[in-house]
Image (tube, rainbow, N blue to C red; front, side):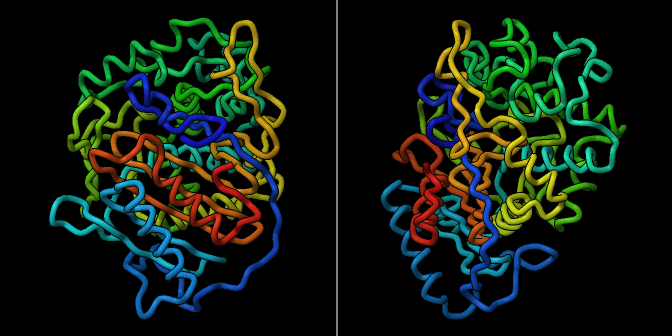
Length: 415
């Protein structure tokens, strides 16, 4: 789900199997310098406001961003681009370019799959439960996950920070083969966990870092048992509800609320529509989310600023002990146990790169990013879809990186 030195989110073919990895390790330069808003218009796109294109004549900053987006659309041969940029919660620009389907213009309010953005919400929900003293981050999970190997050594913190040592089923060739063969298959957590549990752990829990989707399957299961509440309801209660993300929804089916931004993929060797491929493999039931670009920008701002958290919990979100971990060993290759540095590391459900706090899903023809720079109070949200000739990788992240370079050159988003 990210960039250098970690791969993006995963795709099923060998060449693109890293596209879904939450792997763009990142950094922590959290400052609090305010920046004056570029436009004086009211915030939009959340709290019940419509998600529409910027009204009236765009300001100079908005025109600059749109020029960057149009150039990227051409350079990357993108089918559609949705974007929203805010400063201090106030809109700079909201727009959509290209087509959802042939002859159907893309619109800002079209919904798309947001993938690993759910991990940022779940991580924040976990920290809120800790603040309420309903659980502790360093509680081991044997009481909730008694059948998990080494459950008496694995903590909630390890699940949330990818330090358990569990293999990632998404990069398992056996799983990839089955996913490519039937992208409409509905997967259960038990079926998905069978892949990593066939392997021994990469390392002793808590001693290294490696990305694994299995961690969030297990974290969701634990949270549901701890609270007695289904994960979609728990996240709505603790995160998306308070933030009024009314168009960010959990789904138990491949359906996407209308209006839909359609997606297309070349992952199976031909260019085909992938909008309604079953996303059940990406994370736990009830944590598979769809959203639109205005909610994504609001999510970027709120999660990235720690709006729902105490200062102590926010510091934990940004570095829960991952900085300094990650190194290859005799049993864990350098492609798996990736170095977590202050500049680039995985936090608690988020990625930190040069001060940006982000998540960057990319799978089944959809690519997106929510990114927030606390030092500028700058939020960037981008969603893209592809044509038959769009290059591999998270193209939304590429565009967001160009926008970041223009607005905050001191803090490169692409590392």
